[in-house]
Length: 214
Image (cartoon, rainbow, N blue to C red; front, side, top):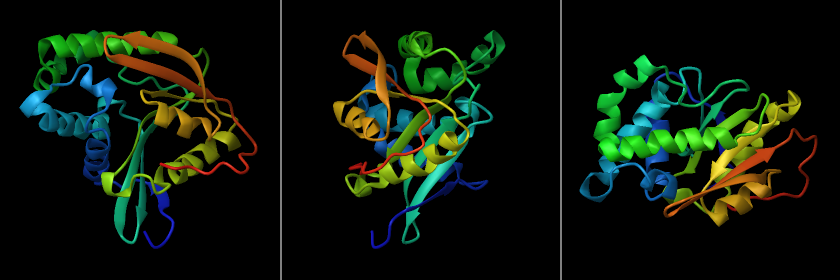
């Protein structure tokens, strides 16, 4: 990476780029391992899930972001603006999603995934907030500061609008990264083989001297 990555909103038609980056970045993430298919179908399930997530599964009004350098996409993120709720489906929409959920998770995994979403939503702070649903860096670019550059770029407009941000983290490494950008753990969820930290960040006017390692 000869130049710092540039962070921009994804263009129409780049949903596949976002999905591909997130599939690689979350290849063995504990939260997805908890409910998505494992074994020989694991990679295919991840890819199909993120293809749907980058489309409209998370929310039809989601914001997609890409970090790129030297003509290559290195990082991607899915944000929800203040007041939007991830995976907020009606009963009819849940029925329509059944084939997708079965394909990526099976019956037991689908039930675990839906229950996990409800538990996490109950731990989110009250009031309006933006939600960083996914942020991932391509494996070849991890450890080179791409994640930090993406956080700075996507948090800046939230600070300007005095908007709180939240996210979920499942590793200590990610918790440390997000803390460097103003997030703090405000709730914890412990399940079999899974520890999810809810992290919250009030709007800030200055983040001096915080360099990322993602």
